[in-house]
Amino acid sequence: MATAIIALGGNVGDVPAAMASALKTFDAREDLDVLSVSRLYSTPPWGKTDQPDFINACALVETALEPIALLDLCLQTERVYGRERGERWGPRTLDLDVIDYGRRTIAKDRLELPHPRAKDRAFVLRPLADLDPEFDLGGETATERLAALADEGIRAISEDGEWWRR
Image (tube, rainbow, N blue to C red; front, side, top):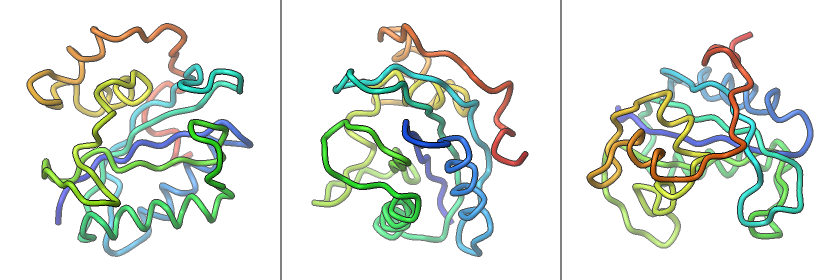
């Protein structure tokens, strides 16, 4: 078993419901347990700014799946919730990204870990810091790295990380 971090997001439809349903589906599997989940955050769009705000969170999971199999599960789950990959940084019903897998370094065509852009994205770092403020991002903690980024407009929209169980 390995621990992994999955970032969740979306800005089309009932995103919190889709995220909660995806997490419950993951947690019901024999090869994956959801250990903890961050608060939900409303975040301004990034990259392509002429779209609605996103809802973001992170989950810490324990899994027997290998990294590529976990990625495939995330991609398959996105499709179940209507994700269509078209416009880069465009609107989406559900986005699931593997951010880390057992602190391994992986460089493959389909998967690079730790996620190469996570350290530059406040919408990932804010919920990641909920899970583990000391999470090491190449010499800086999640909290330190977040302090170096502009995170204006990011606001918590849930009291705690139990929103997905309710």
